[in-house]
Image (tube, helix red, strand yellow):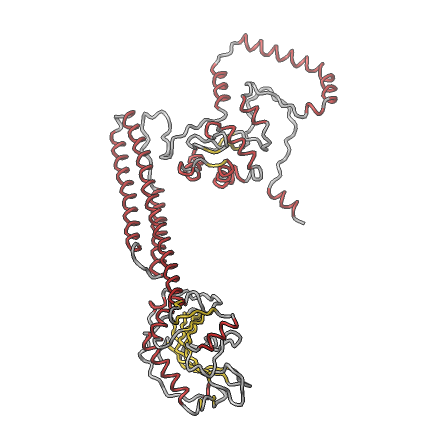
Length: 551
């Protein structure tokens, strides 16, 4: 017995055994080949009914070719009884002609022996009691490629085809295309069987008789679906090729612009520029190589009908190429820093101008520190401070009384900074965003966020989408802190970047975007005069909130 082939004989035997089947070969434990009498039934006019069935037996993909014929049970008048035989193939299918030859021989051997069936009556009580001659099936050698396109997942669907059985080989060949959609497909030319199936309505019934070609139409539909799936892969691949081409043009353009600027400003840095030109050729070649690899894959798909395994393999190659190319692009460097460049070299992404919100304060501090204070000025300052201190001492009781009488007013009082508040700061105070941002995201994370989240091809972009992308890209510094405050953060973002948004609050350009953050700054220890502030309210941590919500 071939390792991946088993032969089966079966039948219905009434009480007490009912349906039994006996398997010869290493493939055992398959599902019973019994018929569901509420859905399909044989009659005394049914000389033969073929079927093909798929199932998973552990890790083995099994396809069974089956032949039924009507036979009545001893001392019973119930209908729908039968005997039959099957050829079971594991992990492949043997040559269909050879399978049918062995199947017909085994079935004929079974029903022609009067010890088994006599005058249409089953003469034994169990399939183990059947007497059959040994059938030579050494020619049956399953070929794995013949089942490579079959989806063996269980669908719970059954199909009955009313069709002449004269050319069962062609029928089996064609039916393999539909086995992915159905668990079992039956073939009968007995009109009583077809009428019974149609009447019960449990199994789908189609015909291939005369002008009615429902079987052929279903096969065409299955082929069309496979073609659509293959076309979808090709379309996706061609789209990827276009994207790589577009990406290449944008990359080369920006790289060349930056390189030309470096040449114009720093003519003496010939060696560095030469190295940058070499990199440019290498990067361009990398893009061309990726396009060439994708084009080779497209040629394997275009105009051909691929097997499912080949299509899946090509899809895997496409993913692997994309991952490899993405990793390669991460190693692309920008032109080398030029020695006389007065500002940091920007990444290849669109140019951005980063302005720290504390620039004005910093410039004022520098301006103040640049002034030299004379001894006379110091004496005047100390005298003024002494007078203020004495005045404050005697005025304190009166101020304290006034403060007590106007609690509601002073609760919202905050001392002004030494510089006048800007219009932007006044407007931002109206936005209920706590804690109020007092800094911007660092240079590296800002560039990374803009490059990955806001490519020019996706602009304009609604403010809601912009905020979600910022939160996702920067969970620690922005997303977690302002979760639930997406609308307020969006208003604050527009306030800080008014020229980057249109009237409908859509992001129209991202080159100079600044992302507000809250950063705790340590107090300046060098301050001579300190203002006594109320104790800060402790911010609830994630753990605190979790403890409160836990019963």
